[in-house]
Image 1: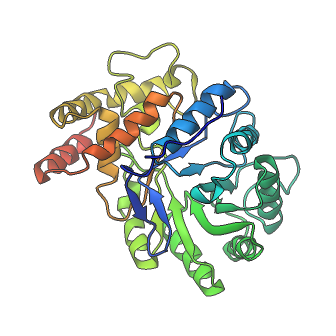
Image 2: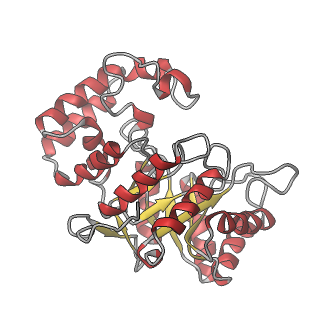
Image 3: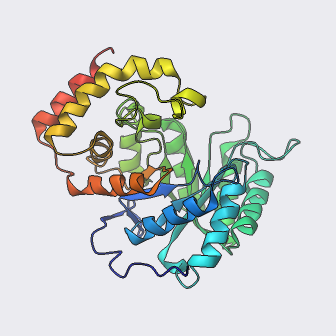
Length: 330
């Protein structure tokens, strides 16, 4: 069936300026890390992307290694762009990344100029695009000089293959240095993509200061801590859950956090929110946050994430209670 976007798609979504740039992001963005690869049902991924756009989500985040297998999320996204979004490209923010291993030999990993430029060329081919809106270096490279990696990002923008560049998972000192190098080159670092959620608050220590001083935005991934900050595990570990089969979330992590999760659930209930919505709203409480990057395996999860925007205000007492819960040893 031919897809026609909802004419009211921009009516209720919140759009936030990214740092000191001219670019705005939807407060909720959709990441295609899992559930959009060749091992997944294509039609389900297509329906999720359609629904996301109908809800005002304009930003879709990918990487060269997303799938599985690696590259297949970009291929499937390219198919969806061609079938459903012809004529809507200028309404979309599309990002991809390179930094993890993609092909054999010494040139298919980390942060060399050769790898980054070759990888982006491959990504553009898989998606059928002339350019992406944002290209990220996906992770720090301890061996390649940061000047080489940032110069490659600058070259990519100047070539027209990306409009903006960003970094992901850099520590605060490296984030500052990367921003300084890019500023000197004349291509500002638009955004940083770190992990940030109620159970991982590392960026509050130094990153927020760097974001304010450099003018870059922030789009956290894993806002729900791999599903811990939902009602998924409050009554045990389902057999089909991530904790039962994924190396990214182990059963002992679920058990360790269960008391805190249940206490947070009580706050969510008082706010008439789902726990997942509380977790997203809590992240967006910070002015440095541009957007929250969510993953999904079904449409209802996207709808729930956007539903978090209906209640973003916190009483000081709520934030104090949340801090106390998170400070407890589970």
